Length: 321
Image 1: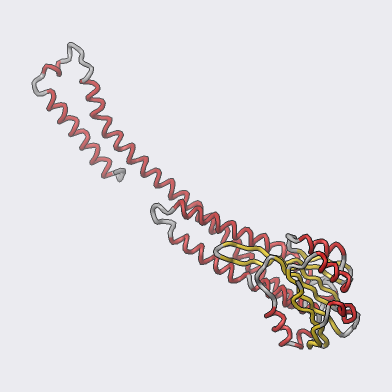
Image 2: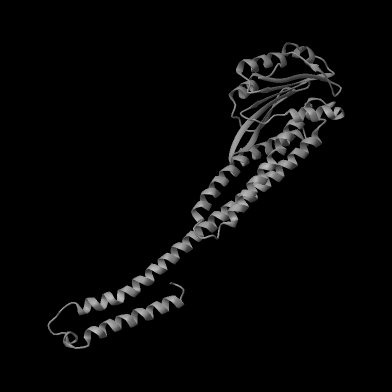
């Protein structure tokens, strides 16, 4: 679905133009066209391919979707895939934006995402001295908007991790903690699979040889690269912390099981004494002198009670009971 189709010249908006006139404006050397699509169909992409002269392999990737974050060059144009992340009802949703950039055009197609870039366009139009740099600055503005939206997600994941850490030493909460930690780890890994490839790819847009459309905006892409480094570092730290928290929870489970085992072993030892004595005196052999003793029964009970009480006190002092 078409969202916007706007022509710009010298950093200022010329007009909203129909799709059929795109090729006419793209042919101008002093103007560029910025088109935004959402969940574009194959037919819409083919129309845009005809108007902009897009490479067929890039169009094929955009139509297929579910691409790995990447930046690819096709002659004097580049094709960029960036993942858009959202936390909705504590679930991580992954969308995608495919961006085609040439000397005189920018085409973006957003799919599987409720986020939009209306604020990006408004910001760019408020800064004509930057928009005057052409399609390279628009690409930066789009990528910067996507990356900046990663930071609130990082903050939300860190808050969730802190809440789980506060419950680690609460007895009986370990199983729930482990389930929540593994769910959090899944979100972190999803985000890392989004950030790490983009971090590697964006190095192509600053320093050394860069595509011609980005030659005047290298310092801006370096800033995006720095943001991605911070996010990637935070994800690595969070992943290590989650691993440590899982080990601590498992250790707490083992400690609880050890406590239970000690209690069971203590009571088993206490009850083993009367069981053993009763077993000995219950054999009913003919020549057992204790059986004929008048005080044998109370003495046996007293002996059992004394030994059991002594063992109980011993285990209590040792902390087993």
